[in-house]
Length: 64
Image (cartoon, rainbow, N blue to C red; front, side, top):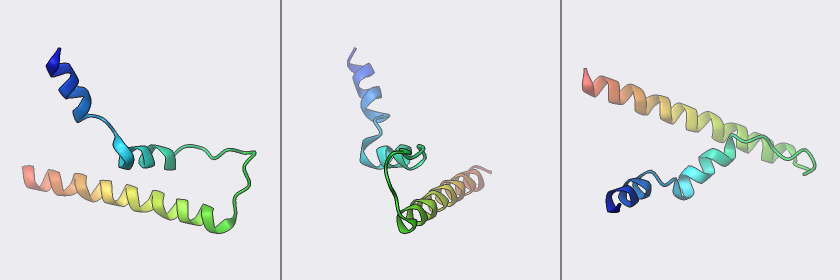
């Protein structure tokens, strides 16, 4: 039972993971957003994807 709690704690998303999930959700259609906010979120999506891609490439290179 204790090992289950440690495993859950290890995979807990936290603040960074919560932001990552929140960025890729569809925005609320009733909430008004401006162009600057939409552009900022778009750039954040691109930067997260590029970072994860670089991390995957770096990991694969280290293993081979």
